Image 1 (cartoon, rainbow over the protein chains, first blue to last red):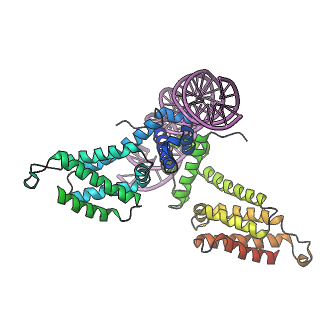
Image 2: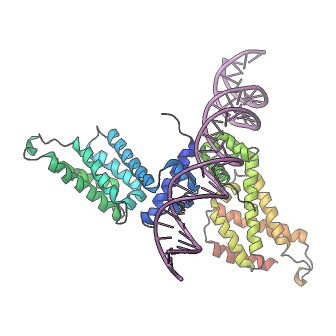
Length: 181
Length: 181
DNA sequence: GCTGATTCGTCCATTACTCGACACACCATT
DNA sequence: AATGGTGTGTCGAGTAATGGACGAATCAGC
């Protein structure tokens, strides 16, 4: 992978952080490009150097986090569920500002469905309906069942300010998932 | 005052913060230009764009703080001592990392004397040996007496982790100064 | 309707920064 | 005396970001 000029990394980081901060203050629709460039301490034209418009910026921001989670699952593919779940919740914790913004009532409506889609893709390789105890079940039903459950509990955990630490969440969610699958 | 390109401000800020952080970790002599540029996330050549060498960087950093304190005293010249002293201690508090680094045992030996010199200049305009109760005193003696007392108590306060809030320090130091002058 | 104020997206000349290289000095090891 | 390693200060070519401008689009209040 070619090394990227540090100016690009710094500018993009500042822009993305600025958007996230602004989204925690007001609605995405009310945010102007000028707002973002002011908060990021970057010239307005610099934003257009990297993104089409603010929607493209939001898309890239979301895609980046999905990609990061994908890498966690790659890394944890051979690990047991509990450890993997803990890695996820630690990632949610590290990026609390992002997730709380995206999952809040006035957040990005598109994010939740992308998140759910991603989670279901992850479960897809773990679920085996040919197992004995699942002979009456199909993936079509199991995946949205597990996926919405998972997304729902993450949503609860984030919106309520992470009332318990990642290991505790990993333990409980791990138990529940193993009962289902 | 001509508006300065934001890239310059950002680079210089990063470089100065990097030096301060490094000085809290190891001795100034052991810090290389490469260390600073790494920590600041800036190319090595960028440092030479703004400073002669690391000594010049330290000088400019110190001078900047002295200048900031000079502006406080300009602003507070008409205010009573206690308010002015509180403004100073709030500045020390805001820039705790800088002062604790500079005043620590392995800090910049030059800073303490520059600091003392500055403080004595400030006192110089406030002390009046022609007053009745001072008729046996001279400025030559009063200034280093008050100056070292002031610097000494600041040193104590910083090195001991600011054990009391700025208003409390302002009160006590204010009382003591008024007894002397 | 019109108008003034914003915001947008784009453009260009200039500037600051980057990257990698260079010769040089210093120091410890051999 | 020769060696390898590390830090220094400088250089040039290339790139990213800047400031300021522009016309077009959108919107509010009159």
